Image (cartoon, rainbow, N blue to C red; front, side):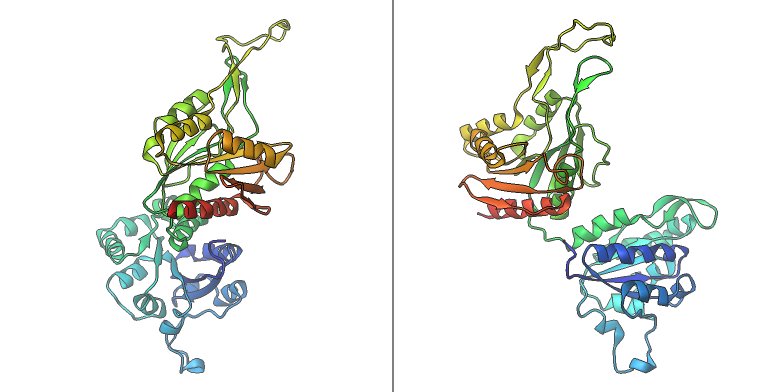
Length: 402
């Protein structure tokens, strides 16, 4: 996990959305990090320090001056083991304090003294947010190197509608993970394919497979966090495109082939995680086949093998992106994986057993074996697909460094 053994300071200021951040404490802990809560005095009017202390398992700090612990300089000591400051919600008052270097409360003084990444999540009335003073202050924070996550739009606590809602944790999580991830893929462009393809039989029916796209999308998210520019070519899935990627939506195997082959020369790495159909109907009918037409035969034609074409181009040119493939097998996993690795001239192949109910298609976990050109194999244990993706990028990063 990216956040394993990390310590995040969660700075809470006095806005109505402070209550939402109580859930974030648990979310951060699930990622493997420790949470240290620092509050402004106004924040304690919206959520009790005792609640946050119980959730975080740590004392909550909300004052500069502590007669019980007078020898401790809290705004300095709290930073000593911290990796990141996350301020949410960041009110207009707190943003103004930070922008102008004021140090009149613990959160502002601590942030002023911090030599570590700071993420700010503004949340307030939409008129306050769009006011030139607030916008100028946010621009000032960006000039300091702080990351500002734009608020969501929608219904506000003041019964108005507009920008100013605290962003969802899923949005904030990506920024936190990207901030704390190593940037070993910076400067590289990676092309990833994901999901299934659909090969039309008639206007209603098509040939496809059970691929959900989850592995490919996990690879895209984790590559983006590690600094890569990501091109994601995806077949039909129910997943939202990861923010920040260049997203190309396709339907058929031929569309995916065209999208990949036209972009293959300007990237450092190509990862084919898509489950592309091996066959398509030789003829796609313009009208729906009726139930009574029982004598009709479905003739199939092989689709283009995208990875094999890329492997042949690599062999001919001598200079080509790293090629990473996936092999979903139901038997002879290692033998079939090695055959495909060498036959398609790949640098790395991730083989997974699709007969396992906890790995492969349409689940959130995977278990793969990484095979390389030197007949080496690395068995990755059952883990969430994001974790598997990170382990794959670890191997890719080492190859790129050679």
